[in-house]
Amino acid sequence: MGTAVKKKKSLVDLFLNGVERVGNILPHPALLFGIFAVVVLILSGLFAWMGATAAHPTTGKAIHVINLLSVEGLNRILTEMVQNFTSFAPMGIVVVAMLGIGLAEKSDLIGALIRKLVLAAPKGLLTFVIILAGVISNVASSVGYVLLVPLGGVIFLVAKRHPLVGMAAAFAGVSGGFSANLIIGTIDPLLAGLTEEAAHIVDKTYTVNPVSNYYFMVVSTFMVALVGTWVTEKIIAPRFGEYTGEVSEEETKLEKLSPVERKGLLWVGLVSLAFIGIILWGLLPEGGFLRGADGHLLTSPLLKGVVAVLFVWAGTCGVVYGKITGKFKNDKDIMGAMGEAAKSLGPYLVLVFFAAQFVAYFNWSNLGLVMAVNGANLIQSLNLSVIPLMLLFALFCGLINLVMGSASAKWALLAPIFVPMFMMLGYSPELTQVVYRIGDSATNIISPMMSFFALIIVYFQKYDEKAGIGTIVSTMLPYSMVFLFSWMILLALWLLSGLPLGPTGVLHYSM
Image (cartoon, rainbow, N blue to C red; front, top):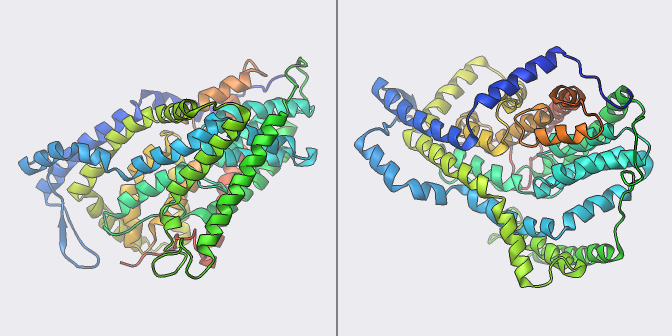
């Protein structure tokens, strides 16, 4: 294809350009949740006046919509605003996890691990390793977008291949495989917290663990890497052909790990082995200190405290690596790195404040419960089995992703509706969550609303100055379609087998 990809005004380009224009009209996600909160207040008054009700599926008692525009409702809004924010389940979980992962990121440990993984890959496995590294990089939030996507272009240049093909492969792993991973990352506790909040609409005692989708996500990691490799080699690479642009020697130089970096990784490996040893020591013996009070593994405090374990492990590895490489010279550097990691959460905390009010008002008003019961009754009348029902939900989530980029923002909006609705039909919150993750991940790479989409365009323009949204979308669309199709097959097979989604991730819910 030469030095550039020719941009064609296809129907897909025109559609997504329209989506981009519509998306640009929308206000900031935080303000959007503020608007949603106001809308809930208005709807609570309207539906309470209309006498909207639903019969509770277990007790048979009538559930009434509560008017939050009443004196009692307004008093509750004023007195519990701070509590809504501070008690919002995902907030504390994400902050704690990010402090530990932030140490690993700021010490340059994660960057070194990605470089080692890619550099050690045989040439024939280069594409597979880049995509796999992209999926794994999601444990540290945005590091894959910032580091691995441009690095993919450099790696392919070194291998005498088109750099945009390398960038596309890396982007497919980082963004298309956003929900999959071999390691629990920040997205897992974040989504679990939102799912648990939504499940409380039906069952106040229900808990959703961050590892509830772990088995499915591990399998998905290798599925994304294998399928993404096939798309890259069979569809994307032939489309681009050979790269004939001018390349400087500096551009094709991939910096290898220095001796001190290799020493740091060695010590990180030893620390990780020590952590694994301690965990096995606490789990394997019948009276192990990490087993639950009943002696079982599924009630282990390790599962309930997985975020704390993630914080200690990632933080310790980051400190060890930073000390050896000289990145952290003293305790001030370590605390400073944690502070930098916390700073990155500023926009998230603003979003959480408004999202927490919206979720609280939605729960107080009983709108979610009434909608869930009536929605479940409607779906029951369609007589859909679990597989077509969940596949349709995945498609719906994928479409929503095209106009609303933030995974947490979308799930904070959708979870209070769909989690209780599917619970009424006998499907677990963990299943609803995993189906959402499929739809959200598959269309990330073609969504102009994805926060790093503009950055990817800039990366592409380094090797093709005419590259724009059409270039990105036309390049990534095959990944999106094949990922979604493959994930749907995997989900259908999983549901047919009846396998658990994770250590605590059952498929069915009993009222």
